[in-house]
Length: 263
Length: 292
Image (tube, rainbow over all chains, first blue to last red; front, side, top):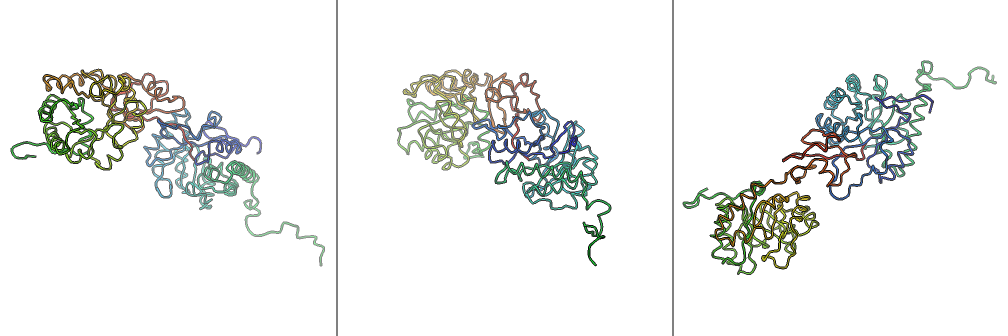
């Protein structure tokens, strides 16, 4: 990691550009170990009813939440109103103004509802939240969310939990190029190479949950994603040769064409 | 509807029956001493005096006589706006098309009774310990009884458990709690957390059962009941004057890790001690779980 390369999101300054999900891990121990291995500084959480009878143990019990920047989500919301209510509860539970707006508009694929996402984002920005909306790979919508005051936009690479990788590279790249706020690629990143690729393109960060949680060795995979994110970031900062003016078009040998000892 | 020259109230549907149960205060259970042929008059008087529920509790009579009696008591209750239940016998409840059945811990399992009775009839269950009251919450029943509050000749072998058992049941119950056992006035049980006061001798052995029922009903109705609230989507009870902080404490919930919403409004942590739980409130207690 280069010194001084930091991601600024609202009041948070992050050295690690991997935002770590906390769902679907095989155990509380593996979750805690995976986050530690990834060196992530921001983690996502969901808000749910407390079980008032019986077992109240949580998969988060191995984590000291005070050590992380918390990014609660509004997962489960089906409307802007539900997302806003979950945001209020999240703020009251965690005393942080960060919120990942997530409003599902299509049950089968969990793809986001663009209108409700936009509305919830606008209203929560007005209430003073640092809003990171999970959105589709629609370029115009990403720009509108940035205009509405989103601290970052989080286009999905593929449907949530699918681990299908980047389904529409063209749109993801366009969003990264055009968006005036940080772009954090969220959802569907299945392998470290997916994360590396979007980081090379200039994504400000990635959010990974299932790709780590459902790996055979989640702790090892957390480490692999962290390394990939770092390599992708280094590559982006160094400037890919294929994106420089000189090398963008045509073909060229890497070795000198003059001075060959032949003829 | 009209049957002959009588105005007869139609049988209540499942929801109406439960709505009526929630508004009920006095539950009269028949005794062993009153001759069978006197029971219709006794039940008529009890219902006229204010009994909301009546339970036929007879164990030894011939089946045919019990069925005939149960049918006639059901009809008397229906006309008088009361709810009629039989003790122990699912078969009797079915034969008499009774509004419900009351089961003891040793009787047929609640689940089995529900399967045989269908959705409409009420099912009540006797509980004698806090653990029984808690386990009952997982069963498809409509109320639990807590007792015996005092030693009673109706159940000579049982140990009195006092109002503490009524309160313990009220603290965990999602369904109305009936206090039973040696009660002769209506207020104490309600104040201890019961929704209904059940009596046997206080009405059945009274010189004027109608007057006795009326007095008990008034005492029960005048007492300050516990509040019914919805807590994380489930009905629960809360004693008068309880604050949200006290409610969380008795549920063993550490306020630091949760957010509390009352009727759609977030209650900040520092305000939990000043926020009183009120009748009909919807409380949500949420915390963080794993998510992406």
